[in-house]
Amino acid sequence: MPNPSDRRYTKDHEWARRDDGRVTVGITAFAVEQLGDITLVELPAVGTQLRAGQPFGTIESVKSVSELYAPLSGRVAAINPRLETEPELVNSAPFDTGWMIAVEPSGDELEQLLDAAAYTALLQDAH
Amino acid sequence: MDELKTTPLIAAHREAGARLVPFAGHLMPLQYRGIVAEHLAVRQSVGLFDVSHMGELVLRGGGALATIERLVTNSIASAADGQAVYTPICNPAGGIIDDCVVYRQRADHLLVVVNAANVQQDAAWFRAHAAADCSVDDESEQWALLALQGPRALATWCALAGPALATLPRFRLAAAEAAGVSCLAARTGYTGEDGFELFCAADDAPRLWAALLEAGAAHDLQPCGLGARDTLRLEARLLLHGQDIDATTTPLEAGLGWTVKLRQKDFIGRAALLDQQRRGLARRLVGLELRSRGIARAGHPVHDGESETSLGPRIGQVTSGTMSPSLKTAIALAYVPLARAGVGQRLQVEVRGKALVAEVIKGAFLRAATPPPPSAPAARARERSS
Image (cartoon, rainbow over all chains, first blue to last red; front, side):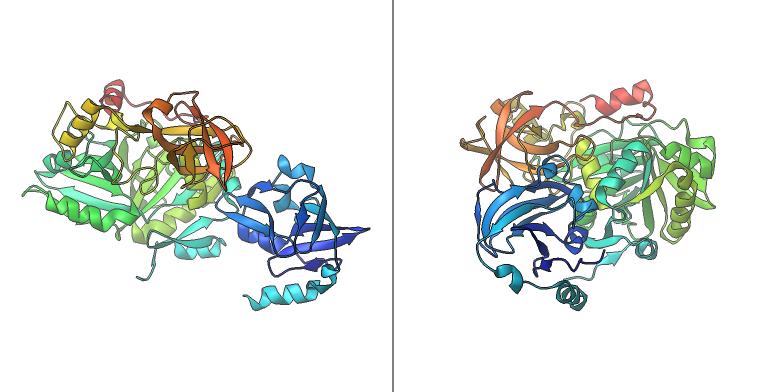
């Protein structure tokens, strides 16, 4: 699955996309491929303050538990309600309906993240 | 570190795009299409597993039966030729050093399938306790083992090999031939479904594997890896040695009392197990279904309490746990004190500092949709009675 160029990426395989005043956050297709079938996504409560690079939740697949890292600092404005009962959306549409949280950013960290070309290059270098 | 072994099917796995992982000294397929898809294929149609990493120890000679009777807790002497028996292998303290299936081909020819991680240790243990007229050969490298499992396993097999095995009862074995390959077919498995385990020469495995894939295409056969094998066996509440049972746990604690013939024969560990039975169990392995949102996994502590807010005293530990793909509920096995092991008991599992409420449930988490033909009544009585 190509990495859409309408958003930014972290080396921890999260994506972040500006949607009006908020930033929507999810994990990349590469991350999902590595994790396998997602069985549980634990997300923070709305209102939680996030710090860039710090864990904000966990994602569990059949075989593993992984932490989710905040790509940027800010306040959690929304969480994807469908993931509570349909965690498999992260597998089927990681860049779309499998999104995780929406953040009201407190700074301009988004612009410092990798663009799609740089992230795609990072994946290729790792292989 | 020793180099990883590969099974005779490694080329087929690579070609099929399997994700390969080290497991018990072998490079094995973890998954092909995905663990959940493979799991559901076995519950709904049919799956094919390469389990050639499993060990095959062969006992031959007039002393074979006496040797195995001393080594295992279940009774092989009271089984018929052609019968398979699941049994723990205990040390003198009653701890489970491995579990295995003994395939009684004849009284003087026993095929013992043991866990891959324990083959060498088991072979040494068997040899140390073998009667003079009993040879113990580790034939693990010579044999391949395929498991064809699921409600359409029989239809898949019959499409390839004809109807000869259709009436083979559960836990029975027979010589068979498929795709020109001679094999030993047993109505056994590790998924809780009907199906067969097929032993063939290592060199024949690619041919048998390819023929089963082809015959299974009409039945939605899915090649399956160790990931699905683990979730399937846990739903069926089949134990995993090294995780749910090991040398620090006894068959009585693990709920395997039905495999321990304390009154019927002598065996290594009997005195310790008789003593444990007399004193009463301190703890027992229980099945848990989580009532809180979350997943219990091996190693998570179990606490005495029923609230989601504060953890009670620690009383045990989870040995296996997963999100059940069939039930969509988190399920687990855990050792807890006997007083907290009753069906319906509520307990807490500690997951990353949080308390998740779990309930002790009875028996297997899931029962097969299509059970295999039952064993003959006499055989069943021998299988289950203790």
